[in-house]
Length: 251
Image (cartoon, rainbow, N blue to C red; front, side, top):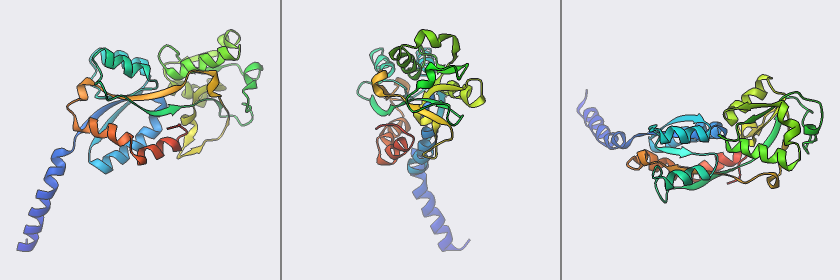
């Protein structure tokens, strides 16, 4: 190798070494409804910072139990604001780190065009045999669905038709696979690349259920992690907020 090339290579190595040393990984528990946008945000985050986010998706209630049992998550992106608040009070979350990263919207959706009308009147009909929902004890979107059915006066009538998933992701899977003709899912889940997917839907009015404020929190196991702190900061950036809005969340 020529002398000037050796000098260039040595200089490049010296410049790159600090970046490599700073690069880290963060383990993130992510509410199932936020799967698609978080995958995009994680990729953008890695390109912007060099840090890598290791993502696990599931129900907020299940993640709470896992965190209490010692799971090595460093950041939680919940589907509610109550779980992060509880974790902070119990000493498993870092005080002052909690913030709302998205406000979710509930939707009644079917892959069948024309099945779901724009007022949700299909719920009063006999045009379906099964309605998918997430477990209201584990998933905030499931609780919002239950509150909506109660607000409509249909909770008892619809009970025999319910197909209950552990998470909102599983509820969507029931509908997508045809095991249920329609279901209450997150509005973000029926978006792909920022556009609505095929089918029919009713965007549930906010007045029918409690607000779905989705909060992030730095967990105790992540308080010494530069990557964990950087990810929470990145979630507040204009770039991340643009992705969040593109998937149908209010933020």
